[in-house]
Image (tube, rainbow, N blue to C red; front, side, top):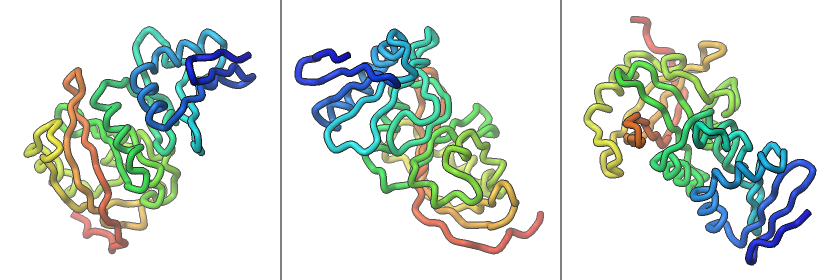
Length: 225
């Protein structure tokens, strides 16, 4: 089955609804502005997802049928090429950050959800390029980890204090810091990571920390306190 949408094409395949668009920019804008519609297409045609393709794409955008649920837009697993995302509700500031991840696929980006007391810090999105930073796991497995699982805790406490200096949603409000991290399964292979961090705040007031990795190197385990 095929439908014509102006100069674009929609196909219903055995496995998906597939929308073909004229360019990467058109695909990105469609994902940004018409996500709910694409999810409804998949749901109404009883397909697990809608794929959005464009000329030259190696990995299409993917919108799950489950995103059409009445609770609002959600990301679950891999929806965008080059990004791993945990299940989460979307707001415009988060969408913009994920677009930034897409526009810089060779850079190593992470998105961490903060709690009001900064103690619960959940990793919810990572560029696939972050795989080289992860020991003993895949990027997908690293999603949803709490920082306290793999950070040297004194370094995490220092970051918590520094984060309070940042102004949310100000791209010029940035800190640069280094911290020690360990392989989660083995509790070995300590390394020093250097990142730039800034804050974003979504429409409901929840704070997220955006991190860009600048460097990583092997180090000796820290002394026990």
